[in-house]
Image (cartoon, rainbow over all chains, first blue to last red):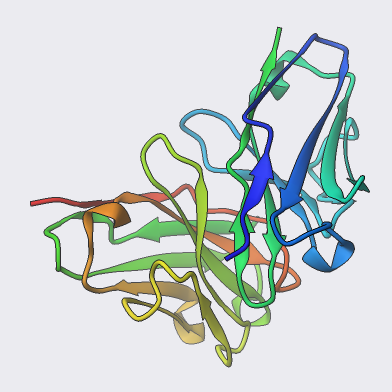
Length: 109
Length: 118
């Protein structure tokens, strides 16, 4: 069973830039894993941000972007806003199964 | 607008059964695959099951395989999750989610709590 690893926590200043990563225990993450990214705030359902590595949903703010970086999937937030403080989850497709990472708690301070 | 509304949660004893429903509206239900995802209290997200748009293929996480069954009723625009032989570790908020291209997710429901306890 694939294990997907994310940074447990990151801190960023308002207006700053931060990159969250998503690694697979089976090797490099490629576009064939169709990385998805989600944001979840306390007491709320997850909200989809990015699909298939880098595609944004119609509601995804422009400051969020997805990519592949150094063998991992990456979510970059540029010009971070206080409302971006949340838990972020990546998800990889693993041939008939989907595996979430453990989540990254992003603090905006 | 797309809406997904889960129902059927509650408290059930270990070994018991429960059926969750997810009522879909605002899109052509028969054209899209659907997922179930759960989240144990204070924990991360765990993918549970997926069903293709036409019900022809179903996939399950190892943790629920053989105990849970995903299904759909196009005439009722409703997704189901039949959960049998429930265990304490199945306690979680269960979400249904729409899949635009099978491998992706877009809209999520608000979630429903299932508690397995004696």
